Image (cartoon, rainbow, N blue to C red; front, side, top):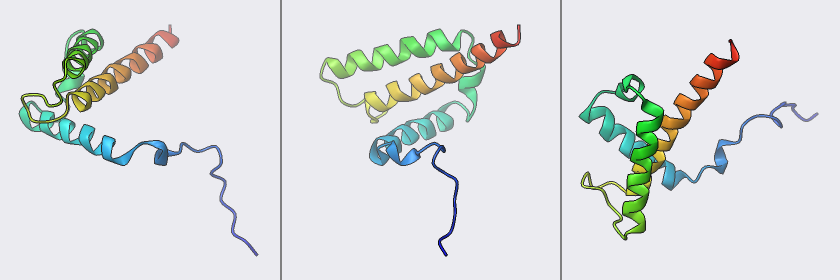
Length: 99
């Protein structure tokens, strides 16, 4: 008899490229050390400010600069900023949904 596991509708995190995610986590660890683990949650106008940060890092990448002054990839910084911005957007949507 075969085992049964109902996971067809579960999120498949294996779709995320591990090497890229590792770089984003390195940036997140760098930020946690530099500022504080959850500092990003306490930024006023966080969604807008992290969108702007993501764009700055993307434009640096477009201009041919791979690494930020932190020595981590601009694209990893941009991805981290996008994740923060997305977290703010999700939170805002949940707040407005209750209105």
